[in-house]
Length: 141
Image 1: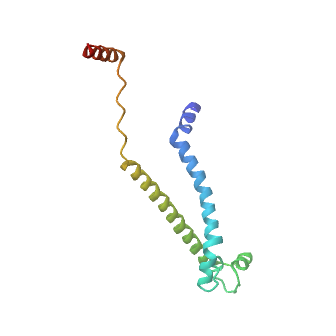
Image 2 (image 1 turned 135 degrees about the vertical axis):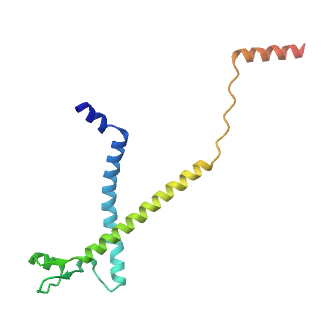
Image 3 (image 1 turned 180 degrees about the vertical axis):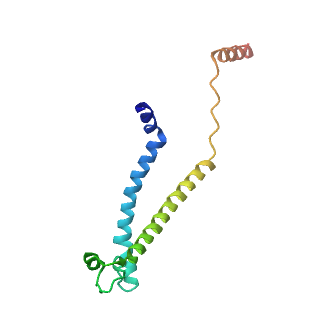
């Protein structure tokens, strides 16, 4: 059973999948930081200094100034700003992945379009070389 598991785990597809998941998780953190720290501040500024992460609907009776204050008090809230942020993250990740795949497909198409050089003719055998020498010698005599 241990050998079967080892064979399964060392199969190329499983290792490739594991590498893809690890790189995907790291890429997800990079994109989240890019969206949160680079993209969202100008968008928030453009629509009136709105901080999306602080947008919420208070379902309780007591008013709170921020999500943090409401969460600290244990108030029931709907954090729709976090949802908006997550949607922006998804859209940017999907667009980046689309562009990467599109670039890869273009490169693959260009490689397929490039004609391959015809193979070099095979080197003549020793017998063929010897026969050519005999032929050339007979032509000269």
